[in-house]
Image (cartoon, rainbow, N blue to C red; front, side, top):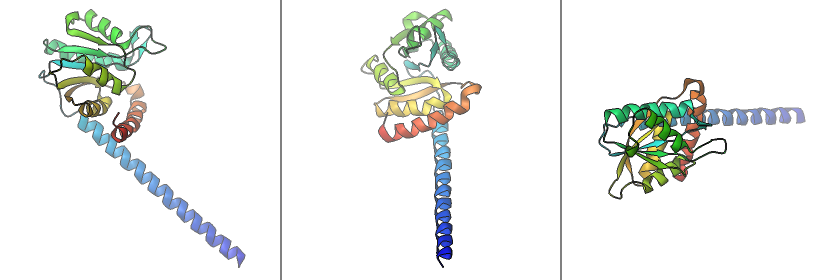
Length: 202
């Protein structure tokens, strides 16, 4: 009799574990699809030169050299800047422990070397997070400016625009492509960051 009871208890326990695993799997898949939609929707409003100011968000600098992610953002900014030569750029990014200069300074060197007039560039050198990118860049905008263009990696635009909106800035965007070698890693990490940002606001 005890053996039958033990077997029933084990079967019940296995059923509960199976149900829990199924529910967890459904939640993970649902969140993956939802955050994927957020990322896709974030890229829908493309910049057309309407905004006078564009914020280029920094990314890692290898010594003095922009990483591939940052290079792609800068390439997108360069194309945009050449097309709309009235646009001014806020270069936003501080200095990490393994970087020889601020990300803003690395961006400045690249853009000037590629023909962008230095008078169009404003450096923001304190930020270390996406939230700080927008907060500190907003401080450099003229008070009357309530709408900006954000220039960052395609996977990163949705979160950047969400933060901008929370801080009272309307935005459109210019997307830099994501390096294929790290695309899965960055997209996965961004989905987690998106959920956190939507919950806590930054």
